[in-house]
Length: 114
Length: 117
Image 1 (cartoon, rainbow over the protein chains, first blue to last red):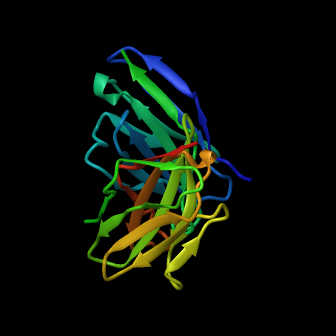
Image 2: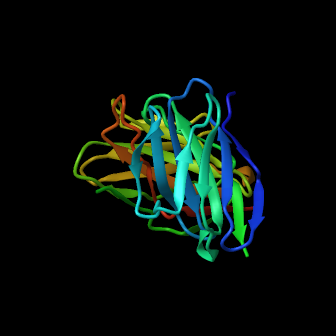
């Protein structure tokens, strides 16, 4: 069964450093998403991406965040200057219909900012 | 704006007993509803979905959910649970899905189902 792959599975970074979280969506999917889950809290939407541009973004997705599809297979989330409160599990997801068939999620990257 | 409420944060239940995990949503437009399951240290897996048609939807592992528009609910049920069903369950909603639109999912806060021997 096709999978969404995320790397690394766990990243520790110092406050103020830049981090890039990487995702390889399912190959024939066209819609891509990032979500995050702070420990013990609900899963929160960050951003959606289609046709090489952002479709929607939440209030969380401020100027510190950016997304990119640098080639035909990767989808990345960059946090420019990490803060302690950015510590969370970050999930990438993809879909082939804008979500109608459900979204396929990766297993997540646990980001710890120290 | 859309929102999802999962009324129970923790549901302990004995093995082979029935269970219901409650989910209510609010939205001003037509909705599409999902249940996701998250096992420890894993990602989110789609359990079942309601898009249109029959209001009762089923998963391959015995769970079912019923869309009730008048009560704005999408409760998840299983007649007999197993130890392996222990996980966190998330209800989610989206609306206005159409080609060319990458709409967001809005999640509930989750229900931890713990099946006891």
